[in-house]
Image 1 (cartoon, helix red, strand yellow):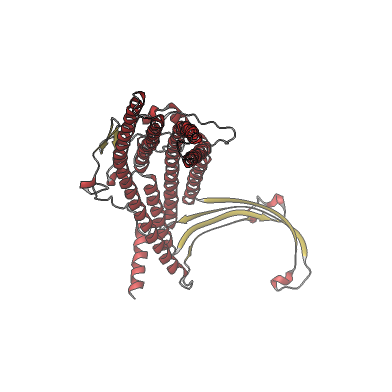
Image 2: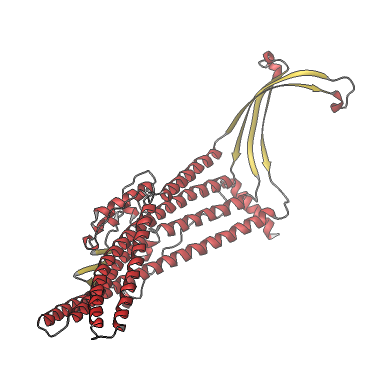
Length: 495
C-alpha cells in the first residue's frame, strides 16, 4: 500500500511540475586533508649538487611544464608527439564522436516530422473482408506527412541527454589524461635514453682501464711475479663490464625506439634529437596542489567523476521507465487510385491525438533493472573513491622520492668527489714512486664506478620531478583555450 501511494505521489508531482525523476547529480565533496603526508614527513627544501628545489602550494603549475627543463630538444619531441601520436588522435576522435552523439541526442526535444510517398499496384480479394466475388487489380498512390512530439513529462529523455553530456566530459578528461601520460612518457624516456648513453661513455673508460690492467698483469704473470689467476680474474672483469655495456646499449636503443613510437614515427626513419643531462635545468619552484585542488584538476579523477555523472543519469532514465510515456502524434495526407486525384478533397485523410504507453506488467524487468542501475552507481562511486586515494598515494610517493633523490644524489656527489680526490693522490704517489701503476688504474676504476652511480642518481631526480608534474595533473587548466580538443581538451579553465 505504501509503495502504491508513494508511486502515485511521485506521478502526481511529476505531472504537475514536469520535473525529471531520479536523483540530481551532486559532485563528490572535496577532501578535507591538508596534505599527502604526515606533517612531520613533509619534505621542505630539497638540496643537492648546488641545486635547490622548493615545494610551494601557491606556485602555478604550467600547462607546458616540460619547457621548465630548458631543453629545445625536449620541447621539439613533445610537440611532435602531441601532433602525431596515434593514441592522442584516437582519443580526439572519441571526443568528437561523443560530442556528435550529444548533438544527436538533443534531437529528441524537437518534433519528429516524416514524409512518405508510395505507389503500389496490387490485386485484392474480397474474401479477406468476408465478401464474395472476384478480386480486382488496382493502383494505389499515397502522399502523407506524420509528426510526433514526445512529452518528456518524467524527464527520461532529459536524463538520457544529461548522460550524453557527461559522456562528453568523460572523453574530454580521457583525452587530457592521454596528453598528460604522453608528455610524461616522452620526457622520461628521453632522460632515460641520455642517461644510458652517458653511462655507456663511462663504461667505455672503465673497459679501457681494465684492459690496461689486464695487459700489465699478463706481462707480470709471464715474468712470474704474480700468479696467472690474477690474469683470469681481470679477464672476467673485462667481460662483465662489456656485458653491462651491451645491456646499456640495448636499453638505450629501446628508449630511442620508444621515443619514435611516442612521436608517431617509424623506428626505421625516426631520429629523436639528443642532448646531455647536464644541459637540463632542474626546476627550482615545484608546485604542490592541495588535495582539495587535486580532485578538481587530475584528469583521471575528473574522468571518474564524469563516469559517476553518467551512472547517476542512468538511474534517472531507469526511474522514468517505471512511468508512462506520453506523446502527441498527427498525420495528414492523401490516398487515391489515380495519381491525379491526390489533390481532391475526398482523397485526403488526417489524424491527431495523444498516446500514453505504460507497461503495467513486465515480470519486474523495469523495477529490477532500476535496482541494477542503482548498484552500478554504487560501484562507480567506489571506483571514484579508489581513483582519488590512488592519486593521493602517487603524489605522496613522488614527494618522498624527491626527498630521497636529493639525499641520494648529494651522497653520490660526495662519493664521486672522494673517489676523484683519491685518484689524484694515487697519481701523486705514483709520480713519487710510492704507488704502482696498477694502484692508479684501480683508483681510476673506482672513480669511474662512482660516476656511473652519479649519472643514475641525477637521471632519477629529473624523472621524479617529471613524475610530480604528472601526478598533480599537468596544469592543463592553466592553458589557453584552443578549441581543437588537443592538450586543453577544448577547455582552458578549471571545472
